[in-house]
Length: 60
Image (cartoon, rainbow, N blue to C red; front, side):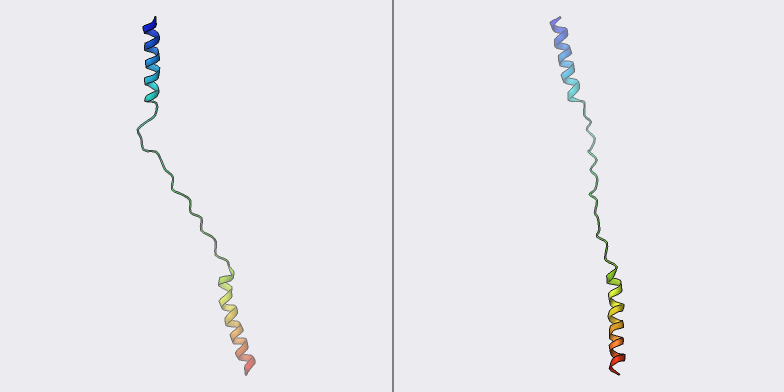
């Protein structure tokens, strides 16, 4: 009976040693979030151009 209990204990200990696999772990790439550019950068240049043209017209 002692041999049966010892064999069962050794079998249980040996089976847990092989529970995992040897496969490479899957590592996910980090998510990169880009900040959205403001829409005012596209409007700024035409506003400056309009101000320069208005100043040129007013100077005449």
